[in-house]
Image (cartoon, rainbow over all chains, first blue to last red; front, side, top):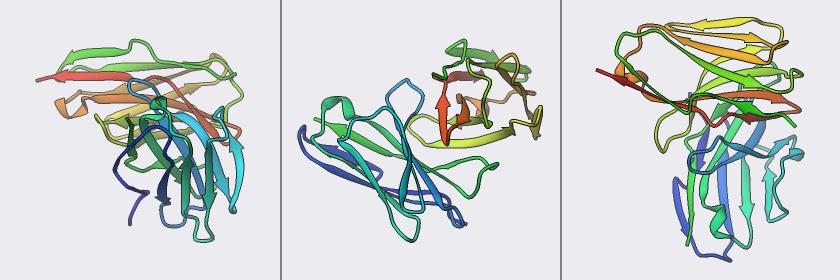
Length: 112
Length: 110
């Protein structure tokens, strides 16, 4: 049973560019969340998608946007990249409340 | 605003030692508490989930407890092994989001 799958695993972008990260949730999971983890820090909540709508959003600027597709997969888009956007981006999914989250292996984004 | 604290930031112990990792949080209105393990440069692996109505959960050599009223959780690791070396993160859930501590980096010496 495949867990949460994220692509790509690594990415290098230039400041000012745009990037799209992808996530396929674990089979049977319909809720997808995105987190940003800077080096040496705990992950920070970006937003959560359920039924193709953004349900909750953390303290991130509008440059961060997302989408959820009918098959529950999700994309995270970041526009006008800054050096400070360099981080590990983690996707998490779960089936229903009362169950824990399953995380993917992450996408390492480096902005130069 | 929920804040999660894990102290110390790093811990080094000899193999075979039993150890306790602590986690504290400021707002007791949580839905779940989850402990994760993270190996360097990797994603998060869920270790234990404690629902708000529960007091503890066990899996193998791991036991986690939750005291909502005092805003504390502990992760107990029995008979530690070098393979347990990793960063351990505590996260509390409220309003559909997880709030994480910075983690405790554990090194188990052979």
